[in-house]
Image 1 (cartoon, rainbow, N blue to C red):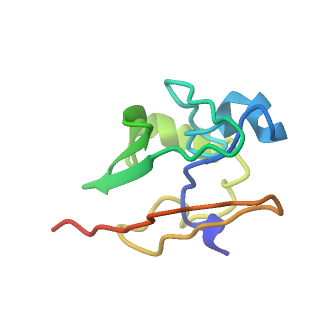
Image 2 (cartoon, rainbow, N blue to C red):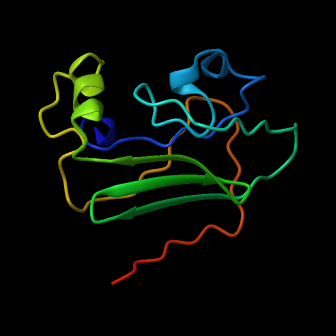
Length: 121
């Protein structure tokens, strides 16, 4: 299971999904661990621009051209959150230096357009 090892950037309509009621699972959050610093509402049928940057252990979540969250994978505070979360039983969680990109949804419609992946050296 990809969620046993890979941190998730949450993308959803906060007003239309139960996860949007909780800061740690809101749009732009590091799912279940860190809340976004800025809220980014999504209107029905609206596309938003999203980007995820991971370089040398620093991760940034971007929505509509604004950085909504920044963290380091080696941050002791993040590791405390992991230890107190549903991910605590997965020792490889947030430990891999490289891996797979996974897009998932839980039964609701998910639409992406102009999806691209860039690997920077």
